[in-house]
Length: 271
View 1 (cartoon, rainbow, N blue to C red):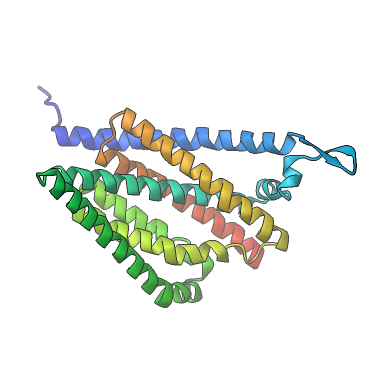
View 2 (view 1 turned 60 degrees about the vertical axis):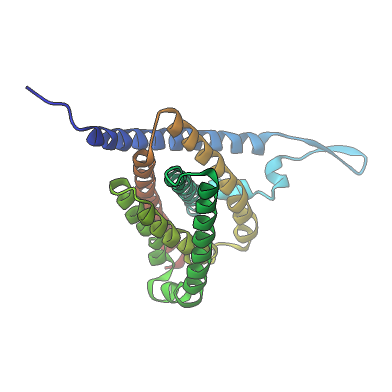
């Protein structure tokens, strides 16, 4: 007679399956909405008065053609997708950290002690992220770009994130999550931030000023919207720490695939 799997295994499987499915749905629907929204923005003709006569100018032209540049160039499109994914993964990871800190604080006791626990935790957390980020920027960022190049350095942060959330999915302990997020956030603020600008070096002058502005604003904010949708949907279906960790594992694997595409397009522009 077959026996039911232990509750821990059930939670693990539920988190893995639900997280992967939710991530796929959000990315698929979000991508379609983004493309449709960009198309509408480019085609909608607001009327301006120029020299006493009505002149129709599309928002694509008002934005300097930035959206058109991103949609036309595969390299820029993949950079936009990378920006969205990075924002989702990092924000969901921050939500995951907040949940674990809140759960740990609830075991402390009095409300004053809980507040002190949370305050001390995040103050030391932010200080360590800032210090490590500074050290990485001073001593690692330039050397990584020198020895591994832009294409090789693209994989530093996603590999760290993949290892981080894989460990969290197996051992969701506050000390483990804190260490992983310190390394992830400090790498994001230093090496990845430098790399984000270096990706535009082989592009045209027009892309550097127009397409980059679109990616830095629209794609970043769209990533915020998708992150909120992921957290809301995941919470609604009962994803716990395991579920959100496995969701980030799935998204990070997609992130690595996007990084591969960027390296291919970057090679075309530089070789």
